[in-house]
Length: 490
Image (cartoon, rainbow, N blue to C red; front, side):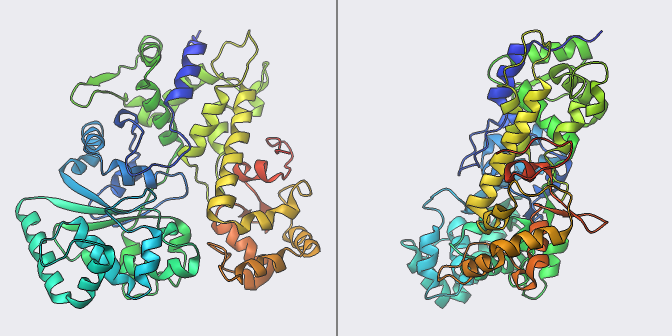
């Protein structure tokens, strides 16, 4: 007979160790020991992976910050040999969400771009990150950009010399760029800045020891205007994707639990005693290394998780008919592109750990707590997409709240939008003096076009039958029903 993990200790570990919902700043607050590198991410960390694509919450901002941390790079190199090259890199940050004197803010970009080509701005950023010597000037960004615009030959000479020095020393310097959707306040202003940066990243690949690495979201790479430059296909052909398989999500969870600040020893001891899993200690990076079976053996992962969460999503001998927690949780956090972000996964588990389970329930997590965890993850996900990324989505979804169950025919949604004047409201948003950020790209095609845009974002799916489905990670918080599904929020 299996023995469940100690309840209170595991709840404490899950509540404290899993990554926070907030994105990384210029330096990640997540300890290096709680870093996990899925196989797809190892390729993304490669020096020649210039373009790294990932949905919201997939880890773009985390890697932007972690790659700039020597301690994180050392841990990754030791714990994940397939990504060991990162230990030999030097890095700097060329743009991100956190304010920094090392790169221009959104407001400075708006001011400088008013009189100069975006390419000159980014070349000035690259020169600054590389610490190019005189005659490249110090001082305000406008001074640097003006020099770059008028001294192309001198800048080229300085870049080539820096590249030669790095190559002869056997070093590679990577300049990291994140949050490209925040280069400006509207998509019209974002496009030329993003396009120029992608062009420059492609051009820099001709150097031996200097690379740019751009962390971008799928919607940006789906914009034809941003990719309207020669040989853009070469950049896309070599892009890496931050994808999380089910095994990766649980491996991240176990990595964090094994290296939690409190009660982690009980988790590791239980793994050793009841599952024969031995955790090795790396004194060099002060971390416990995840046992191989918890990385890639889904059968073992499932056994361990079911001693934390119970064997079924309902009580009683027929409880397994409602699903198994190991598969049920990621399945209900998957978006329309069949991707799950570790941020949603962690948010659901953190919330589930706070659920007040019956006193006689033997496991750390209760299946009802997992349900409420999915509801909370959905609320967070919808708040992010409607407040921060795509405000127009809330306009599109408002008429459907409480009035629709999925899957449904497209015509049902079209009628609700027509009755509420939704497409006209979206049109007015796009035509404002300050256009809505990240607008629907196919609004001119009517309801079908907006549904296409929602599908591109992963908010809805078009089934083979042509009907429209909405995954639970959005459906629950948007207030749509589904027979047998997680109850929507009111």
